[in-house]
Length: 107
Image 1 (spheres, rainbow, N blue to C red):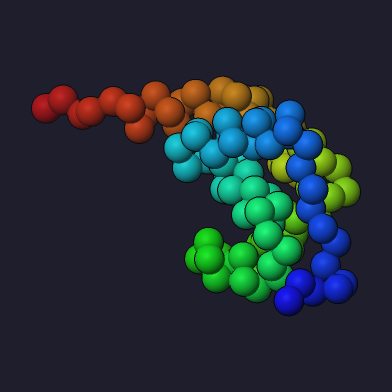
Image 2 (image 1 turned 180 degrees about the horizontal axis):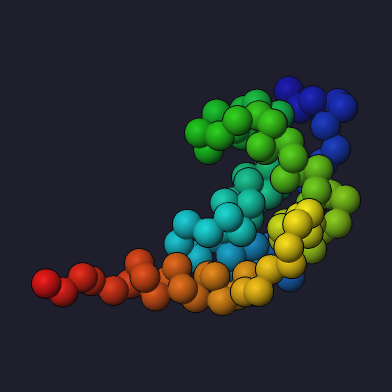
């Protein structure tokens, strides 16, 4: 039985395609967030049930569901943090991780 307090997460086809593309990005934070949103959209299950299915905490699922509902796809990006501004972009970080994971170490 769906939770009456839970706001339904409805995905238009264009957003679904973007999220599915993000899930193919190995193990980046954005891929995890996209999997959470897709799982929430697939059914009207509570954050607890989705969290158990994805082996995450209920708080994590609730955070990303709420941010997606509030800001849509833009809400899944990292928000600015206090301190020194970054000198490297998210795309550069992802490229380094993908390159590093895709290479083998030679002796």
